[in-house]
View 1: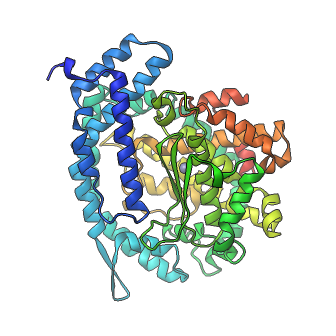
View 2: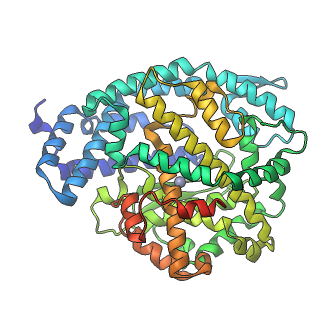
View 3: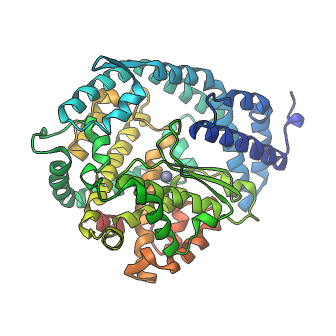
Length: 496
Ligand SMILES: [Zn+2]
């Protein structure tokens, strides 16, 4: 096939829009329990012409000739094409691993539990010793797949190097994210250090409240899912009130989610529906799905607010932008700013007071925030070492040591591969942590302490959301008047 057979960029973009719409809608149908069988492969088969080396060469050629916004747009189309080629080559092996994981079982109290159900059960088992036992069984069974996981990483890395022409995985990601991962790591390690005293106070209180007095000095990671449920607060933060309270919270910012024509809400409780809340932006701004399934507890409220931030961002995109700038981004660091800032309302004492008469409860989500921040910082440090010298660099022992030191929770060396996100997603979350704290400080300065219930906050956010997926997280820092790596606001939020 010659280059002439490749599509022009506009044609590629239009077909990509149809492809991603079909994939998103199929994924949604399975996730919410409307369909029992996933037929993604059939969609991929219909669009094989999109992801070819000829198409990639054609896009690269156009990109080299372009300038300004058009060059950025073509860069994103090229990276999407690269990812499609790599995904197609790995699909069969990834499916095989996924299916093997789905059929893996652990024996638990006379029952054959699927691995995923064992993981889910860890969040609801009330007995400390039972969580320890099930956690151990689950981790050992999962670690049996480590050879295959590592093999897939190796193959994927070889393909990436070949398709992108960049052999260094860290340099490749830095180019895509337009940041230095090592500078980011240094700023985060410093912030983490400054907030350590506050962390130790929070840890002492909440380990005691969530795990009881008979816990180990350093509890294992088997208890993390349980801790995230904040079960002592469950009777206050009921399943029944979650939608009503969250809708009202958003209304006070000036957002009427229920009558937004672009947002399709699916809040029903159906047995086949995945309990994890999510947003599926099938075609922003016109088709954005917000899916939640309340389980009871403060976590429902946090998840709803988080996903509402994503949904409002995508549904608030300027429809006049080209498709690429409505849907495709270099990474996830931008949209996570907006989910984080809306979720941050669940850490405002006045919010807990207003709806539940319990301002002191704001400390619980602050504890979780600090725990997750420390965990992700350690994850980034481990991943940097791992990829800097792949496949000969530090592995499981380094992972366990770093995460354990950061969180005072005992992490397992053999979990380092199952806990690895593709493409340094950890760095995107961490940038969003820094940026959403800057945004909160900005809103407090511009609006006041009532930023969390003032419609002026809605006006500021709407202006940012119109820009779609186009700006980088670092460009947003400049708009807010901060240096990209200024962690002052974050440290203050973590109590440092
Ligand atoms: Zn998110």
